[in-house]
Length: 279
Length: 352
Image (cartoon, rainbow over all chains, first blue to last red; front, side):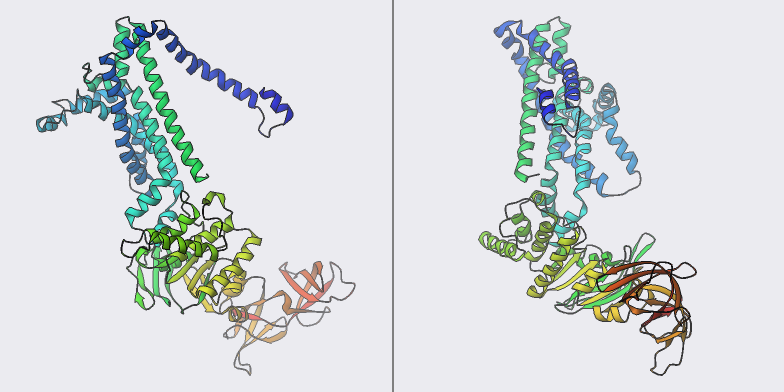
């Protein structure tokens, strides 16, 4: 069909058929086929079995933690990621390159390293835990610990998506707002935030998606107590270790549907924003 | 409102952007800041707007000292070179922005803002585009929206940074005339920055010529064109040929006399001491004579007839190109011919 279109109307960008074909093939091998395997395997267990495995009380608690902690971490990263991007774009200071490289560290670091480091820090006898635990703030081995780990892994997503948009926004728009009499707060709320909100939303969506799927850094600090600090990806591992493949895939399929639905909704919101502004 | 800057100095790192600049704009005046890039004209404009603060010197608007006042408290309308429109707001919201951010007591009612926006859209001749977004407008239309937005807050003065810099030639010319009309109608004291001498001479009541952070001359377009104060101004206004000459002191009319290749003419530039000089002669200030006469001996390289006039491109023996425009060239003149250019007017400055 595509080649038919090409023959009738030669494109100025040739090679659509070839590149699209390779794209679909690569996507199929790396994403679609493994994902469909998840559904096919879980379909083998029948509807009742699927519901029992995917919506057990333990699984529901795990979903709640995984999605809730990822959402909380994404929201916190929205604030601190924006602030970090702001500092990196708007100011010149000594050691800026180092700070910029540090932001990327969670991308490069094996997540297990992050998990161990955070656990060492927040454990009751750790550097920070020693002071926080007596105050009644338990971070290690609680849902709070999960959020902390997810903030760590999600930060670069927000910073790196907001940064170029903020740089592109330019100081002149802020100066224009100021010369029109707007206060700093009005300038931020009415000019800067709306302009960067699509990028901020994208960054948060990426941080959120990463948070939902995060495993390595979380399992060390979470303590993994069922119903309390057990994340969904871990529950899948637990099921697999008990040779309960069907239950594992049922949980996986459920997560897949929820994640896909959320990302689709975010994409829709972005598309709507763009349409409204005629960009 | 009158505007004045006195002894303003500004440095960026080791670079002196402004070096003790003073100027004054009268109520209702339209002033152009003209100069090459790096001359400090935009810095001066930004300091007037409060977007930049001077290292020393004072700024006052309407007789009130503004030196330490922030941009948002100066009531200055500023039109940015790249327009700086708010991309996520409609045209109407852009124009109304300055009114909606006012503190509660002084903020006009919603319907009043709407009425004012409609009025301004009418003024900038875009009455039907209030619902569009900046991305859907042409460059010229964006420029008008930027101007309407600046006017909406009823500024005491209007400042424009290279208002036509990003537009193509045709739109530029139309907008130029229209901007002058808007200025005459609103009666606002306006200052604009440009590097285009035609624009400055065509539009402004007075032109401030700047170079290297200092003001070279402030004058009306006529005076600027007739009596450029310095060699830089004369050169920057464009078109003039540069030739070596000699100044002779003690002429009768109190000024000095300039000798160009044996032709003696009164100096149209400010008087200078006797000695070697750089003379500027505009293309139409030449006549041609046969070889052997007094003047500048040259060889004709090219001739272009444009209607009644002919543009000659000639070269001296040392290879300096001199352009002359003369009415009715003698018949039979062809490239390679030797002739003499006789200046009819000259502006000379001490050799730099």
